[in-house]
Length: 319
Image (tube, rainbow, N blue to C red; front, side):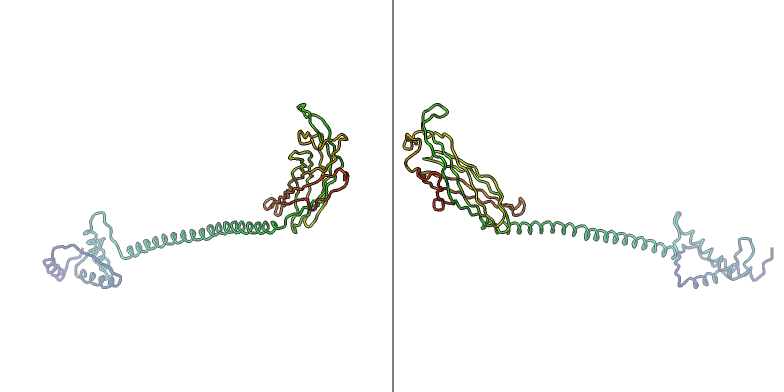
C-alpha cells in the first residue's frame, strides 16, 4: 500500500463537502453525442480516485473512462424499476427493424394471397363464362339453323295425283249378317292407282296412309291399305293399292242394287277417302316436318266398264 500524498488528501477533502445529494439520473444516449458524453464523464471522474476491481489505482485515461461509464451505467440501472430493462438505440432500431420486417412480411403475404385470388378469379370465372357462353351460343345457333331448315322445308310439300280406279269385280247377292239377319251382301274388288311426288330438294320422306275406304251411302263396302315406303328427294313413284270387300251387308241400302243376275244394271255412286301422311327427317329426329294430305274422290261405277280403268284426275279433292 502506498501512502497518500498531501495533494491527494487535500483534493479529497475539498471534493467531499461539495457533493450534493444523489438525484435520479435520466440517461439519454444518441449516437451523435456519445463521444462528448464520454469525455464529460471522464473529465468529471478524473479527479476522483477510482480503484480498479483488483484494488489498484487507475493507470491510464482509458481505464478511468471505462470505469466512469460503468459507474454511470450502474447508477442508471439502479434508478430503474425492478424487472425493467435498459433500452439502447441499437435495441430500439433492431426492434423497429423486426417490427417493420414483420409488417412488410404480413403485407407481402396479403399481397400474395390477393394476387392468387385474382389469378384464380381470372382463370376460373372467365373459363366458366366462356363455357356457358359457348353452350348458349351453340344452342342459339343450332336452334336458328333448325328453324331455318324447318321453315325451308315447309313449302316443299309432297304432291299426290290420283290417276285411276279399276273394278275387277262388283257382285250383289242375298245373304245374312253375323247375327242371322237377312240382307243384301256386296262383294267387290278394285285397284286404285296414284302418283306420289316428293318435291323436297334436300330431304326424303317416309310415307304412310290411313286405310283407303270405299263407301256406298255412308256404308263402308271396301277397304285397302297402302304399304309404307320411303321417297327420296326430287323423285316420284306410282303407287297401287288394292281395295276390296267381301260379303259386306247393305241392309236397306242395297234394295235398288239387287238383281236376278247378281250384278247391278244401274250406275252406282261411290266415294273413296283416305289421308296420306308424309314425314321428313331433315336434321335427324330434331327437325322432322310432317305433311298430311286428305284425299276424297267421287266415283261413279258403270257396270258396262268392268275391268276398265276409270280416270280420277278430275274427280278428287286434296286438302
